[in-house]
Image 1 (cartoon, helix red, strand yellow):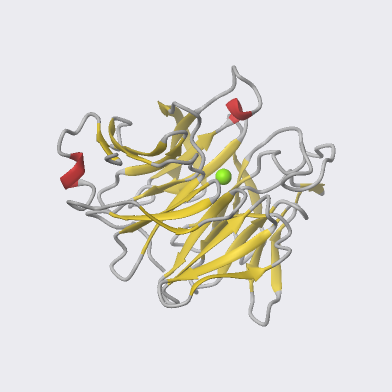
Image 2 (spheres, rainbow, N blue to C red):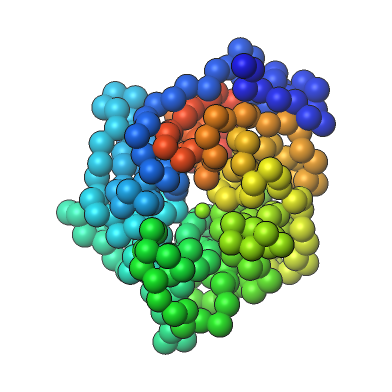
Length: 303
Ligand code: MG
């Protein structure tokens, strides 16, 4: 079966995906693969098996290894400006940064004295600020955390200044905010809402926001509804195309939300990430497996 499905762009298979590219499975046997983050310095991909409570590291030379077990139900990961791994931990309901020697520094675990719900995904802006989503997946079941009453009155998107420790709510209009990514010039933030996972009338769309002064969000709008399934993690390539997880694979959107084409994946996709020596490989975390396929353009941010 061909895994490349053009939609609005008939040439998707050659303009967006490398001609003749194939989907390869790198790792399998996972429970819920998520949170891929590529370290350019290490030439390695970190990713989480959320339900498996492990953090993995994969490289072409060394293959797959478990680097944290338990991972405290780690979910989303990213690499900061200094090449350090930043991780959302759903168990202790916090965002942490690896500080060497196996230690982690807690970046955020409370807002206004109240515990976060369960941070899900995270991205670092070029000014060093840390933006993350805080849906309730880690406290509504024990599968990805532990059941608890929420302390906050909603599920928000946050911006953290790790220098000052200042934590701000930047978006309140999502039901279950999930994946997030900036446009290449960081003037737009895309955030997915996956509320349909627990409410069949819930949201399953990508929102776009204008970033104001690098601090606030304005002009919230639905960029596109995603189906089948729901959007989870997403990434933006150097051409400003959006690559978003969906029920049948990875959907590639133009900045205006037009669905250019899909990469069909045989398992439900949770997230994706650019990496590889040239940055043009798309790593895909999909339920029990990690896949990779080669694209034409790479990611906007490679650290
Ligand atoms: Mg997610």
